[in-house]
Image (cartoon, rainbow over the protein chains, first blue to last red):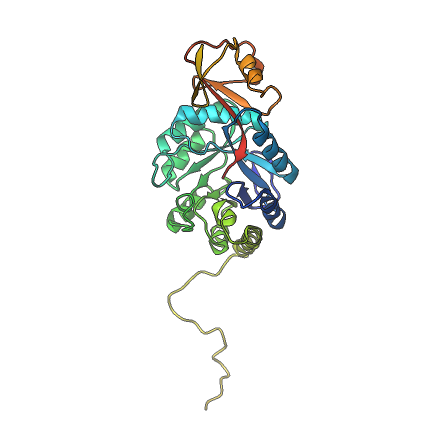
Length: 256
Length: 65
């Protein structure tokens, strides 16, 4: 199982906690999938403070690792301050670092991302950067202190799957020992299986499960696909070829 | 004095960030704070004096992806 910053997790599925029809269905999705990490956020609290407390108690009851995010942050300063608040709230050094560069695609701002990753790594954070599959960006993130990379499959919430297989395969080849997670863009379990077949260590998703007609069943579907894809990767798949080759022996066929 | 709390203008007599948090009924709540875009740890709230025009953010755990 993957090891993130010296912590081994029990599942290759990292699951978001937003957009579920109800807290009960959210909990059921975690239970049926066995997801080992829950992503969470920090948002403004109104007087009384009950909403945050109730949500926190529900997440704690799941018994999983918590990965706070800096979702929606467009500047380095916003992301750094959000990360610092999240560290205090959730009592963890883990941070899923998002520095959004474009409102339409929600793609990462690579320049701000590297700067924020450096600041946070130097401050003792374990940074999980939401990045693109760009090799140069990923090298800069590693230089900045990241020991996990989380390239997107496709833009957040699109469900389009793995848009750049070549880039993702190339990234895996360049970083054979670094934990790599596909973060965002997955819509179907088959796409998660494909990520596993490429040798990725885990996937992080939210919308594909939360917005399914039956979120808990879909979460379980993803868990099984991850298991199947990982088994296939470890089993050393046959190389594809262009020409047909009969699987049944030609020798011994009756002449009719 | 007039300050901004989570984007809304409000009058307060609270001299410190800790006093403001108490005034809002959040003294025992699970919240984190920032003043003028900079993080203020819980341990420093009592020593953080508020001044006119300060922008306060008070956040709590929420759903996220």
